[in-house]
Every structure is written in structure tokens, then in C-alpha cells.
Amino acid sequence: MAKECDLCGKGDMVGNRISHAHNVSKRRWHPNLQSVRASVGGRTVRMKVCTRCLRSGKVVKAAC
Image (cartoon, rainbow, N blue to C red; front, side, top):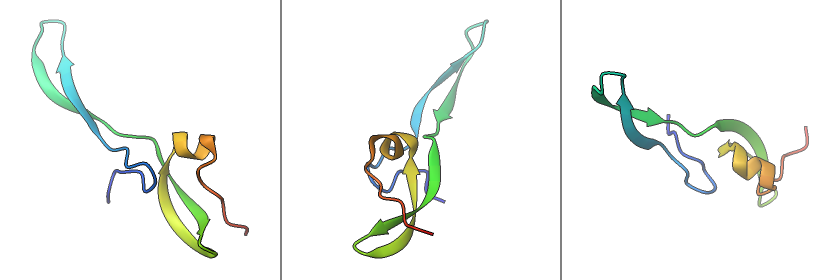
């Protein structure tokens, strides 16, 4: 399963998990992806879209 937005391409970010004793290990932040039925070119397509694209109106949801 791809953890990437189908519209803007937003994906995982990487960084460090740092404990109180300053032990460092790798960690990841995943984008908030939602599975949405959207109309693209007159057809209904299921897409994984980040919430920022949903909120900004880049996605036209398909009618039920």
C-alpha cells in the first residue's frame, strides 16, 4: 500500500526519535490519507488523498 497522496504526492517524512537520555533512532511521520471516491474525467475513481487536498477543494467527490 502506497503511503502517498495521489494528487500532490505528499509522502512519508523521516526524522529521529530522541529519548530523554538522548538515544537517537529513526522514525517516520505518515501523511493523513483518506480513501475517497472522486470523479475524474467523468469516471468514478477510488483515490488515496491527503486531508489538505480534501480541505482545499482539489478533489471533486463522486455522487453516490
